[in-house]
Image (tube, rainbow, N blue to C red; front, side, top):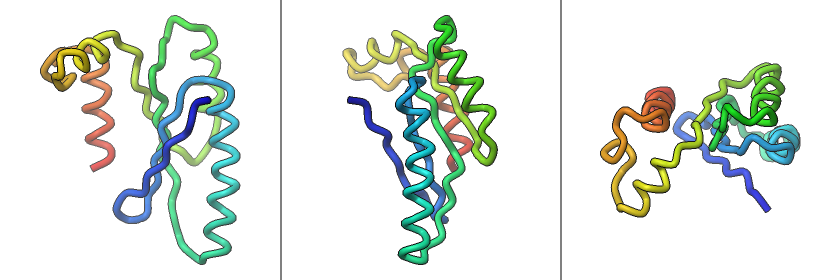
Amino acid sequence: MKTIGFCIAKGGTGKTPLLAEEFSFDGVQIFQEELDQIQKNFRVKLKYEKVILNQVNFSYAIHKKYIEALQGVKGYEFFMLPHDVKVKESQSLKLPIQIHSPGGKFSKAISELAGALV
């Protein structure tokens, strides 16, 4: 079973990493409903505005389909972290991806994401 992670950053802004699969897409909708209920019950103000699509393989038709579906959802900023074998290699070598593959597609995408989250 895949899980959706959620974190609250400073200012009460939420970010969600998810995979390009049906359950993740449904999970975003369910999560938003639950978050709305929490905000109502506890009178807190949280913004849930960034979604991180992880391990995207642009050669898979199903991933392209989910990307299209997600981009049609208003109110969120989407970031895509591509599938990259260099990530697994860097883990096995115990090196940060930015050192193991500094010009790679994942390194570029993670740097863009980090800039948007700061």
